[in-house]
Image (spheres, rainbow, N blue to C red):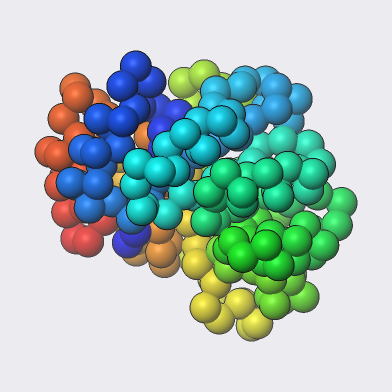
Amino acid sequence: MRLYPSLAAAPLTNLEETVRQLELAEVDGLHFDIEDGSFVPVMTLGTKLIADLRPLTRLPFDVHLMMVDPEWIVPELVRAGADRLSVHFEACPYPRRVLRAIHDLGAQPGLAFNPATPIPDLAYLRPYLSFVLILTTEPELPDPVHLPDVVDRVRQNKRRPGLEGVEWVVDGGRSASNLREAARAGADAAVVGRAFFRDGDIQGNAARLRAASQS
């Protein structure tokens, strides 16, 4: 299972050192949440941070757009250095068009789903769909509760016809205690927040998370 630490959960006072530690921990990429204060009532990180961090590392930048009508900001984020971009199904009236725009700019397109949103037939998006991100917490809560039953959505949907090769990612409340269930459900990757940065022990936390995801 690939692991993407979420920088929204990292200490922001010295991100250059944090990125260096994450590189040493051999993570698979860095995850950024870009919020508009409307789709979700928070605004944690911004586009300038992505541009400022891009020269510091070759790690892939995985950007999750938690915003209404995100199509306009896609070119700016790709220019800033985003390698992967996920947009919310709930926020895109025309998801195929937005995913195609991401694809045509050279980034990997992903579609994100809130816990309560049913996952429709996605086969018609396949030419432009690289990954599906399933939120396993409600995004509006400041201290979100992990919703274990939502992980079953990966198991239920991953083998749908026409979705071969699509990566399935879980995001929200991930820790060493529940990564195993996500891997067994078929998740290919997980976004992990506070569990990566707990007690300032990035190396130790990364080792524990990696072991849990592979057991």
